[in-house]
Image 1 (cartoon, one colour):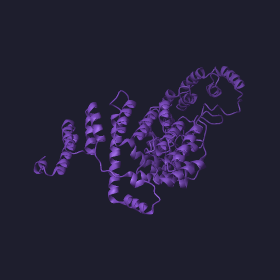
Image 2 (cartoon, rainbow, N blue to C red; image 1 turned 45 degrees about the vertical axis):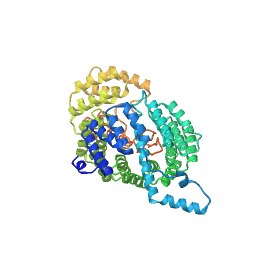
Image 3 (spheres, helix red, strand yellow; image 1 turned 90 degrees about the horizontal axis):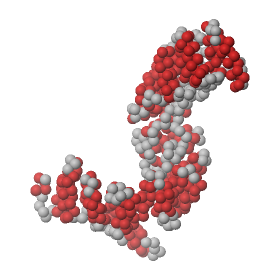
Image 4 (cartoon, rainbow, N blue to C red; image 1 turned 90 degrees about the vertical axis):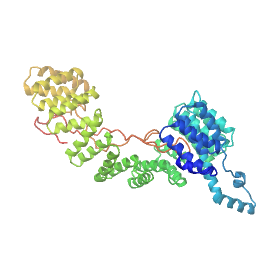
Length: 541
């Protein structure tokens, strides 16, 4: 304000810049009424699209619907430096005119005009998106009001793009019928807008897993605009979903040829190479993605997973440690680190990460199972029972947790409690061969009078199930041994592993939640009552 007092009215442009800074200060202090007064004063002196845009934001903050509409119309009436587009871009066979057009297109003032045109177009579209949600009864009607206002201005070329944005909004709200109807308006047009509409129609049918229709519209999008790399990415996603990895790779490579910095193309190409077991090239793709978006959570996760599959556990630990520092409350990162250290033989460090994962998410069955087995191997049976009971709360119909509790009681020397637990299990899971074998063995060891009854029940159960006494016990008793793998992400789908593009402007890849830990077997022969095992035999991890 002191600077404003020292500037003469003859220097109107300088006074307007100072007033604009004053208004910005009012906005920062959330004094919107004072900011509105300053912006209104500026617009009364000079037409400026930036000021009109700021004024719309202020009215939006104060929820003044009528003023939002009026200011949007003032924004559309804002004067900008124009140029003769028809002269600049018209095709010609006259060599002299062609040289003139080439000079015009390379002119510095022409470049300034283009930048200013892009800026005001962006302000108009952002304003329309903002106010359309509030100025009418529904967002659709708000989009229609903004579209009609734009059509009546010199920026009528933006109206089709707003229609596309409206259809995308309906698509995000899962109103597929209305979205398809809106997109099909542009289907037969031979223009870039038509290519965008076909691309979004293809995405919609891809989302609904109607791949044949999706490919039809995506092919139409590419035919209309051969540089529409978003349609190529979506077409590659369809091939990926159909496990046609070579075709998917080809489409992603074509998209990168057109747009060398396409985030979606590089990420999906990395997934494709990973599926093809070409881990070295997949790593390069994710490294490129991480270069484009420094510190990308998705890329770091994939690089850690690739390092694990290559057998470089130290590099995998470094990646997941970095990931945990970026997402300190992500339980799956702690779980993966715990699993890595367990495979490396450092069970104490593995326990720390697993317990930290349990502290973050106390209902993850994989983490609970790992901790229960850890305490079992450490002969801390009371602690193991606590975690097995937590597992029962999550999976009450899984017999193995009940059998583990009885096994812990036996290891603690509480044979009567173990026998009572087996009886409860037999009532809850009648004629279960695994349970009956353990009861028979315990009755024989303790010389209990119920031995004959349970031997008859076991014989009857084996006849019914076809399991003989010499065969291994039911899989309900233990978790079957399988090859351990790091917690991989779920299979690619339109909403998770693959990144799909909904609008042709190129949406940034959606930040994906790190995949929940897949069931990783930490148990071998967890129950000590397996046939041929002694009661005091320790169980290897």
